[in-house]
Length: 86
Length: 349
Image 1 (cartoon, each protein chain N blue to C red):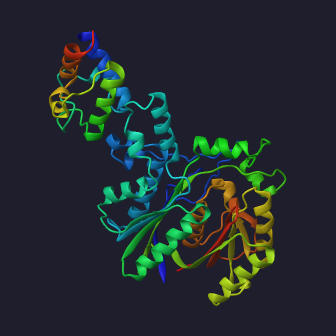
Image 2: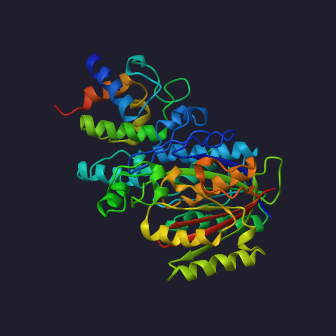
Image 3: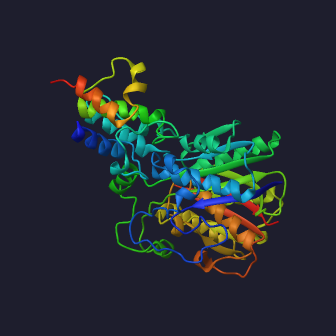
């Protein structure tokens, strides 16, 4: 799980081209969206959906779940661990 | 009268600072000239910059510089021009579609790839919900935006932000190189004016202007008129078109203080440009494409050069072909891109 979260941080920084943030600076439970977090927006949400599918083969069955799943690096890692094809 | 009250230009030269005017000229020894980037984070939200391509960054920033220069927060309309637009991003998106075998692809390059991305981005940043058009008519793109702007001002808009932008895209550069339009021999950008090595240097840039019916303390001069001519059959037709244009503005060739000509290194175009130069035997003759390269909206760089010459009442050595010691009070810009010829006439305030 810890390794997955570290990988996710690097992938998020690369996919979203976060020039002002280093992967090591992102906390596991830090909010990804909103002004109190990383400040990601709706286009970033689309990029995260693409990232999930391209890197982990996961499609969001219900888009409404996205808000919970993409809350933090930890919630994304949990979703991947629970749903990734064995 | 149409006054130019603000300008912003990002080009292969140091042009983004309005308090300077070609103090140092950068030479290019390649077949392309790329923009010198300002610190974009001084103009744009760092969070937004990360998602922008080069053209979107320098196009948007040039527009914002022009608005700041004019002291206009929100223009009454925005009219822009581009030849290729953000074609490279369209190609990136299509390449991703192929690479993923039509699977899920990143949406960002698609979202930002339309021709009007720059003008809409500026509109969002300055809160302009009014008329917003982007013209893409090859060598007449900027001139079409000028016509649109004239209509907007006639209809009573207080101020209009007009601009043009193009970049050296990978695809376009490869295509022009393949068909032999670019310089083959190594040379510097100033060699364009020597006419010994044919072939153009591909260029890029963004130039924006705030135009208004009202003169301000910051006015650079006035745009008295513009005209276009497509595919003249011979030099006579070109000359007659220019003479008719001047007559329509109650001018004779002797009245033009400075003629800014678009010598590009393209043999056929430059031969016609020489016949234009021959008309102005008493004017100071200048050129500008050795500074910005050749691209479909390079006439906007000529527009910028005219503005700076009028405002500073000076003609920099870097642009002079023949110096007849004339003060730039009446300036004529002649541009050509392949079969597209255009004129823009300016009067200093």
